[in-house]
Length: 223
Image 1 (cartoon, rainbow, N blue to C red):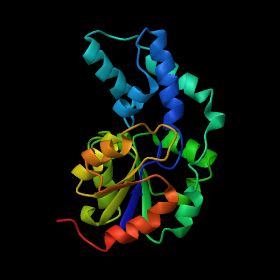
Image 2 (cartoon, rainbow, N blue to C red):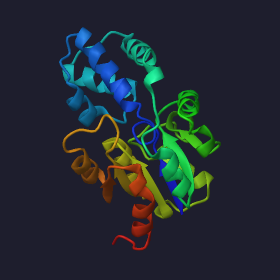
Image 3 (cartoon, helix red, strand yellow):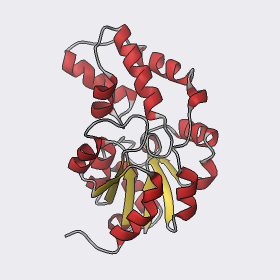
């Protein structure tokens, strides 16, 4: 069995940094998107995908430097980045093979995992969706299928831990079982139900709950 973790918003509390930066930059462009609406709609998507979706809804183009401005603002606050509470202890207790699948670039993943003390818990089994397989990001199942193929594990024998609707959707479409995580700084009202609607079998609010949850779910197969 293989346990696959998302990174941002699942093990590292980074989604909230980028969400706040995005909302501030969007407001500079007179786009009234609140933080909770942003989190519930766009969590787990790349900046490029988010901007494309907003442009399609507005039926107009946004400034070409929007992504750079968001990243610049978020990076100025990167010193506040932390691993989610209980991440190290949970990994100590998890008695299964594990890897990481993320939409972030491998460069960003290494920097943030080193910054939060998690790099050595996963390397070299860290996969960036935009750099492997078809290079399609979540909600495409590409990165999850790549990990299963690379590590020679049947997708049906994989558990994925994800915090976003699009991530859960991608893992579910890959034929994997999914546990939603709703304990990061960007969580919102209805987050758990949102992840269940996307295909999660259950949700947890604390990483400490994960080992027992995986043990319990692995003892039965969904119909």
